[in-house]
Image (cartoon, rainbow, N blue to C red; front, side):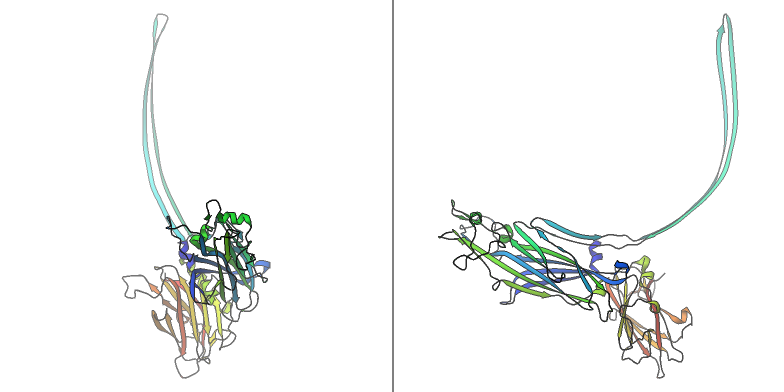
Length: 508
C-alpha cells in the first residue's frame, strides 16, 4: 500500500548512459523524483513550499563481463574495468524560490549503507448501537434440621432444631449504548539501499549550496583517487611499492585482480532532498527540471617485464565516458497534489473563490489563474475570468480545468458547482468533459445569484457504482483525473457568468 500511495507524488525516468563521442552506451540510469506540497510556517510566516526528493541509481557493468569458474588460461592483465564514477545534479526552477539543500546521501562512506523514507496512516469509520431490556423474578425456599445427642452423667440428652426460610426477588433493567468514530490519514514510503566493497564515495556541494555531486572510486587494491600521478613514461601511473604488492605476487608471478565491484560492475544509489519556498509572487506554473551529468573512468593493469613489475593506466578526463540527461519539466503543483480520501473529500476539495488563497490570482480576463484547495487535493486553473471570477466572454476562451487524484474504484464522486448569470444576461452553457471525453455533457445556467440551491448549484455524477441503476457509469481512472469546463453564451445578447465555488464531493 505504501508504494502505491507514494506513486501519486512520483515522477520516474529511465535512460541510457551514452558517450557523445561515439554514441556508445556504457550504462543505465534510473531516477525518481517525489514532490510534497505544504505551507512553510517557519519564522512565524506562511509561505507556499515544496519538498523535493531525488533518488538516482546508476548501473555500469564491466565492459569485459566476468566469467566464473576456472579460466582456460591465466590472466596477466585486467583491462578497462570501472575505476571512477562522478555524477553531478543541477536544478532549474522558475519563479525564483528560496532553495535549501536539506541533505544528500551518501556523504562519505566505504561500507554497506541503506536509506529509507516512510509515512503511514489509516482511514476508517465505525458506529454502533446496542439496546438491552428485560426482567427477572425468583423465589427461594430453604429448610434445615439439626440433631445432637450426649450424656450428662448417666442421663442421656437430646436436642433438635429446625429452620425454614423463604425469599422473593424481582426487577427490571434497560440500557442503550451508541458510539461513532472516524479516522483519516495518508501513507507513503520509499527506500533505497547500496553496498560498497573496496570502494569509497564522497558527496560534494557546489558554491551555491544547491547542486550536489558524488565521486566514487576504487580504494583497494589500488586507490585510484589518491594514486594517479604519471610516472616517467608519461602514460603509466607511478604506484607506491605497497600498492604494487597488492596487485602482483612476485613469488607466484601472479597478477592480482581489481576489486570485486570493478570486476562485476557498479550499482550505486544517490539521493538528495531540497526545500523550495516561494516568498514572492508566482506568475507561472511552478516547475523544476534536473540535469544529471555522469563521467565514468576505466583503469587497467598488467604484468611488466621491467621495474615495477606492474603497469597501471587510468583514463584521462579527455578520454573518459561522459553522459548527460535532462528530465522533463515537472509541475510541482500537480505532482504535489494529495489523493482524495473518502472521509474528508468534501472538506479538502471545496474551493470558495471569493475567499481563496490563490497561487496565481485572476488579474485579467486574458490571463490564467490557478488555485489549489485547502487540503491540497484539487487544483483549478481558469482563463477568461476577472478578479471576481466573472466572465463577460470578451476573451477568446472562458474555461476551467480541474485536476485531482483518485486512489480507489468504488467511491461515488461528484462534481459540484455554485454559479449564476448576471442581471439581463443570456443563459450560459457549461460543457463538461472528464478525462478527454470519457464522460461529457452540458449544464444550462439561467438563474441569477440568489435563486437558491436548485438554481445556483449544479452536480455531475462522476461515478455511479449501483449496478441496478440505468445510469451506472464510471468516468474516473485510478490515478490523475482532469475535468474541463468550457463556458459559452447561449444567445446574441450580452452575457455574464460567475463561478462562486467548486468542489469534488461524494454522493450520499
